[in-house]
Length: 373
Image (cartoon, rainbow, N blue to C red; front, top):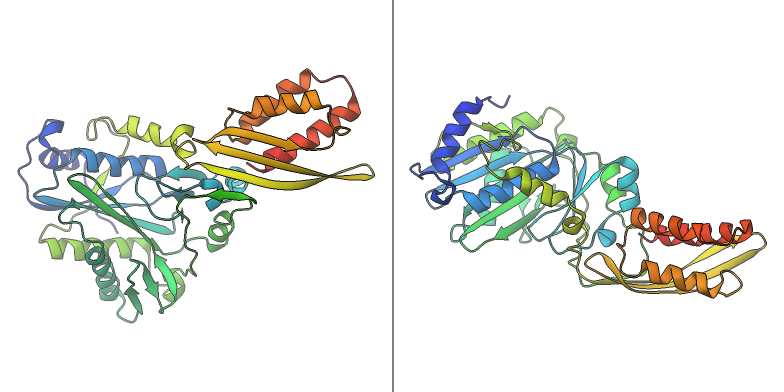
């Protein structure tokens, strides 16, 4: 089991290691191992930001261990519509987060362990971190066939990815984080990381698909606690520090001043969606109504998550030109978001003539447009 530590001890240790700019002197050397008591993706990503921004890493390094409730985490420069099934995320109440590091999209749940290695930029070394993880796993289960690739992935049985990597390099500080698939729900993983959206054109960083496998499939006697302990022990041995794991509450402002504002920012629409690189949607869909099938063409340019240019091409007999123009006008400048579009089209519907047939056609068109989002 992961050893417990009191809040008082953790606070004392953190106070010693915090940077002078945070109001504390840095006197310790070696390193620190911390584990989050939260499973909230935004809180845990905020801890990464806080350590990167506030801790003095010149004389000591930090290993941060964390796990999340179901969440999809995209890279800093990625397009969520391109990377995952947003409709399915909403249906399953799975959170979407954008991290500050680059790299590809990953699925997190409690069957996945996250490891973050903090150092100065000069001491940043992803390969050494991953070799440490592999060494810890082999010490625990020597029979495991695992190795690190040139792409900084960890493979099981030479073909299955069990760990992916991303990093953030600041001016003086840096961190490298990686996942470790232990007992993740692979059915959910494969379904949410499959984009259903057609006609997207984007220069955003694309993810590289890979076959994955859980460590527990290879050895059912493993547990997350065993793995965390083994990694902490190897880290402590290599850095010549106490292997004690200090538990930290990511919502505690007395330990991490300003942490809650960081977590709130990571949850905003402007960060999660608004930071998406500019992209376009050029697609068409069919609407079946009574005895006819209508082909509708839609072209949109989306910048900062908002519709910058919008064109909808459909026959005049389907929708009065003035009403179609009003729809295009209202969509332009709005968020590329089904919730905002629902409010928008509902408001416009009130101005429609009280014609049941026309309103039915309007609803069909708008529902299909929302499906693009």
